[in-house]
Image (cartoon, rainbow, N blue to C red):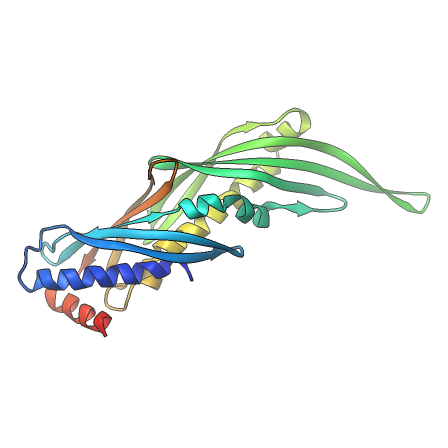
Length: 252
């Protein structure tokens, strides 16, 4: 099940409460979306996530929606996810292995630290035989800053390398060569995949809401004890009649 599968259930709960508001209760009171648990499959890793949120009362047909997704399950499985994306072993080329990785909140940003082992081999033929020689080897630590943004109703991530610790030729490759850029881009892509599955409202919200949902902001938050949360805020523009029709459909 995709992480985004939890959102329709949460919205369904919100719809029922907003329906009551549309029928005469105080529409300006916060309307809580109860926690919903779901399982996301990333690179073969089952990841448990929980989402919850709130819907504010309607003002001129506009509903304020805020959803928080707890990504601590993703943090716990980050190392095997990155290994499946980054590890490679070429006989006559590069060999890279992710030893461990961690992702920590630094609100409103996230900081990913990857500990990697890298080797580069070259192959030459001599006397009819192929000789494999190791050219570069070493361990390195790459620290990447992740910054969420919203563009075209989609949450994107900008990745910037903050620090690289490695000695000798490996350090030079990570700082100035294509290896450092490749690691940054692949790290960002792996996190982007998880974030998009939790914030792609147009593909996850029910018909009638998806067409009017607008993501306005997204940022990482500290959930305490090092847990990474992502908070998404947006708007729904619906008349009481439209929301009543959506709630009726969800209740079937």
